[in-house]
Amino acid sequence: MQRTPPKEQEIRIAPRLPVIGILIATIASAAASVAAARIAGISSEAVLPALLGVFGTGFLTLGTGFIFYSPRFRPAGDCSTRWMGATVARFMAIPVLCVSIYFSLPEGGQFAVLATVGSYLACLAAETASVAWTVNRSLNDASI
Image (cartoon, rainbow, N blue to C red; front, side, top):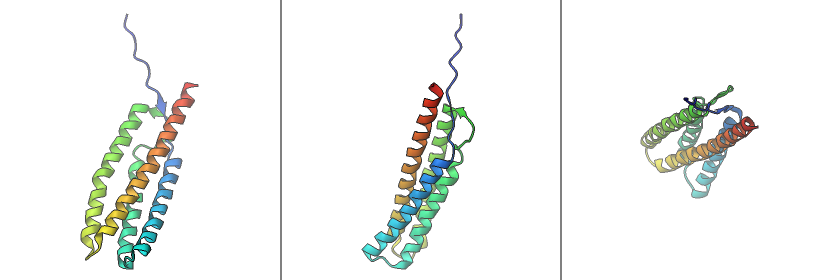
């Protein structure tokens, strides 16, 4: 007698909560970049590329996030595979963004690169926390 494997649990990752978290992280990163530039006495010419990097990172995180956001239920393995794919795509794209910002500036590119990397880490933390909360809630609702 052959057993059928159990059906994989299905989850739904609605885009609302991760998008809100990423937007908050991006705006907070932009404010922190401006504040850090003022405190460190960095010229205003270096702040604009930093802000472009910060908002570019937020846009990139939001754009790749739509690979795995879904208003309908999907198998949990499918969602985790899509999330890993989106994260790997970002890991490949963010260095390209940083290098292009760094070499487009005549001087002082380190500040813009650090602001971009800091923004990416903030966006990744916000997305990870909101996705983990959503998945946990979805799995707990499914077990009831």
